[in-house]
Length: 314
Image 1: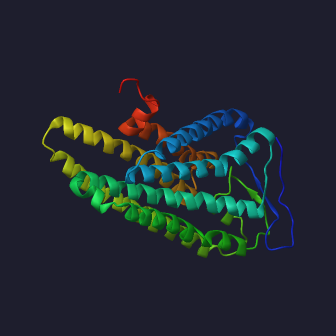
Image 2: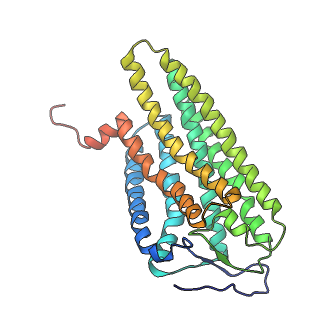
Image 3: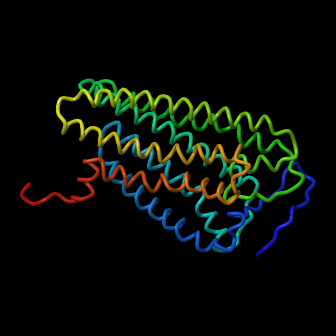
């Protein structure tokens, strides 16, 4: 096992950080890389295929699915190549600026993804609760404005985090016990009062996740009420099946994300290797599941996948 010692420097921050991977499981890194790499390949293939099909489809849901696919691809690619280089080649060093860039992209696109789920919940709400006015309410300009708001919110809210990290002095260690530059894992290395960074991170998480989850919960409560008021059992089951796939995607994103966030800050009795594994799960598994769930449950995408070419005589 390779050991690393803290570097000494005279500048306010180190030139490089050292990523340990999964502390305590270094001997199993090669084996852990197999499912990680498999998930990454499936994410690339699934989201790439979904994105290619969505470009030929039209409607608010497909525009939002297109955004979700792009977000998933960026999230996976932000962490997996470096993580696999740690597992396979023991390439643990990462430049300070590259670390901040990785941190920004991860949290920026996580915030965007949460906003996309809100937009998709809004689309489902209008489609089921007010179907006759769906096309009149969610016009292309409205969808464009919602999409722009989702992107700007992610970019602006997360923008202060790398600047806060850069301002702190790091004079004790440059070793990050993680597979990637997770915000709190880096901030905890600073030898200064980091309450500003910690409080800002908490406020962003609660502002984004809290409001988004509340909006999604209210939307789907109204959706479920509308479903139970539908006239026939078959219609109720069909509509509930479509919304059920959306809820599965949402739960697969928020549940491990909230668990990882809470253990990072308050789970002092949770093993470090388990915290790191969970942090990777919520970044890697949803991008793999999203195209599978939507590809199976969305009729237009399923038909396009199963019948790429028109039949003769049709």
